[in-house]
Image 1 (tube, rainbow, N blue to C red):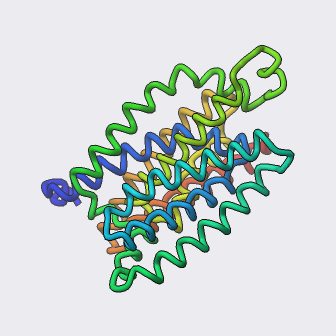
Image 2 (image 1 turned 45 degrees about the vertical axis):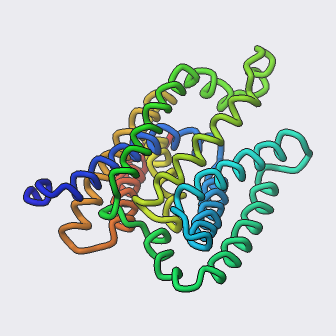
Length: 268
């Protein structure tokens, strides 16, 4: 495994995986506490439609999936904010729309169906320099979200009180949805469309079982996301397993340990 670190493709894979882990680890507690797991599934299917559109147009799939998924995320938030429909209902509508569009685009992308498999299941070892730059830029951009961590956490636990204190909750909802969408698309190369929603949920869920405060939950989520990416990547190399599945399986293993710990401590 140490010999693999000498290869540029593995170095890129490792670095990209760790950067994506930082993004997902930071956002995962918000997804868990705000019960946005279903949003992750909806956006994953939006990414599928964007990738299929990229294959149909013979362009770079992820670069087309990014604006498409971002648009769907903002549309879901807009429907939730401006109508009486619940967020689950809005997600369900765009979920179905994205799957239908993805199926149409993929059917028309003759000769490129095989390429979709790498996006469905992840291909971390195929990460290129451009992908690495995109993820790195997003991590830098996420630093601007750090000053909003307090207001976001405030609204996460008491939305009505945050509104009463004139916190721009709606604007923060749009920002969080946008970051979730972009992070999800950038994570596709790591774990694939089928597993990317779990990648954004499991670290926060495991951290929730062990943390006493939201700050602790965020730090633990970051740690678990980084650890599972490292462990999953080396597990993939050692056992010749798909990289995305290996990372998510390692996350599930860590979640199991957290569940056992919570059980022995009597829960929270």
